[in-house]
Image 1 (spheres, rainbow over the protein chains, first blue to last red):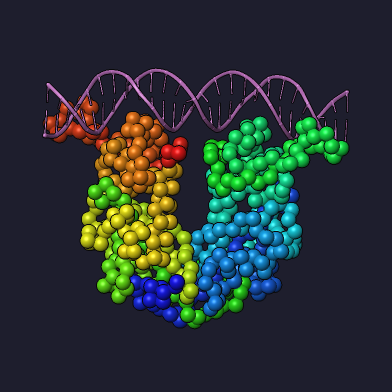
Image 2 (image 1 turned 45 degrees about the vertical axis):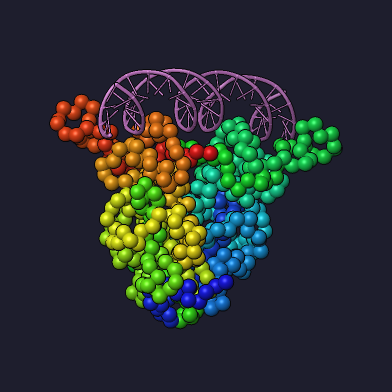
Amino acid sequence: VTNEAAASPVSVTVSGADITVEVAVTLLTLRQGRLAILAVPPQVTGDRFWSLPSNSWGVGSEDGDVVAASVLGAWSAAEPTFLEQLRTYTGAGVVTIAYVAVVPEETAMFDPSRTFALDDVVGSGFVRPEHVAIVDDAVERVRSKLEYTSVATSLVTEPFTIPELRRVYEAVWGVTLHPANFRRKVLATEGFVRAHASTHHGGGDGEKRGPDLYLRGSAALLHPAMMRPS
Amino acid sequence: VTNEAAASPVSVTVSGADITVEVAVTLLTLRQGRLAILAVPPQVTGDRFWSLPSNSWGVGSEDGDVVAASVLGAWSAAEPTFLEQLRTYTGAGVVTIAYVAVVPEETAMFDPSRTFALDDVVGSGFVRPEHVAIVDDAVERVRSKLEYTSVATSLVTEPFTIPELRRVYEAVWGVTLHPANFRRKVLATEGFVRAHASTHHGGGDGEKRGPDLYLRGSAALLHPAMMRPS
DNA sequence: TCAATAGTGTCTATCAGACATTATATG
DNA sequence: CATATAATGTCTGATAGACACTATTGA
């Protein structure tokens, strides 16, 4: 269905110009309750900085989402529970299409030694400067998405408890939330979470008891939204 | 401050591959109270569709925002009151970095004959198919931004009345709003609008009277947000 | 048994939607 | 003068934040 003629822009095509198009992915997760990021060591790139996983736009590349997924697959064994385009960053001769991805807490990633707490790498001269700006935007995107989407459930492993979900919000937003109010709002939001079958409170089985367990709900968007504290 | 070494990605650079990078801009405005868009006629492109104003990423291009602004300048005399990157669309051999721009209602644009009511062009086979998807996303972006930012004031000419501002919301969202409640919320939102000097209600001058006049406020983000009706 | 955390319920301030009333402009 | 629209005020239901209280778990 792709039309060659239709693919040409209004302007004259400057083909073969010295432009590099690359796809970079910010993979966020939780590590010991802290927001963490996957980075590629300097040795791999020959650079003096750690970098975001990335790959250049090859001749056969057609879909940015597919490239992003393959970049992820090359650096992490974990299937992301969330992946979307962030925005595109431009510089002299380089166009970087950035993506954000999220995997649940404590999922085995490709190499734990390449996973760092965000606070330790940001502003530490550790990560490549251009990538720091991308990471900042990626984190802000996820912070914002926690408000009106159910991404938070992409950061916990199923089944999970309400307090576990609350700690996701607290870690990503960097705040503390009132447990009681948080619980009330989550359960009042249609499709956010659903009760796990073997939830307790009357379950007479001999299994170990504990907080109520939940699974991810079917809603992508939250009504009402979970707003950040002022 | 740009570092050539730092600009190379983790991967091998495929330079000179047959990739076209273009910047396309969706310029939205209001025309006779309806959401309208600037399009470039088929004759200019040699295509059989109308297109979004766009330009390819030249050798000297460094900043996408600058390219977007120059694309706009080539097709419209109006200075946009709002311009931001939307997202990047990828296809076989083409990478399109899309932007959204907004100019106030009734501003003289480069050529009114190239400005169309959105409802007339979308899904009419009039505009290039790939660009229809971009326009849809651009409109949704603006619809969403009306909720939590003050973009709406970028769509009216100063000074404006509260009902004029309300009609912006009604046109972009495609709904009707309660005048009384709308007014109360706008005026209760800090920094959204500010009173125009020669507002009436006691102004004893002999000038023609009318609804209260306002100017754009200083706030970019709205607290509280103006939520869309369910 | 004590401390920490999970879960439930209540109170209050705030905000959104609906509606009533008065003022102003235009035919 | 009559109608449409602007502006102001009031009422009610829903929601967020604060807090009190009980239940459960584990040291």
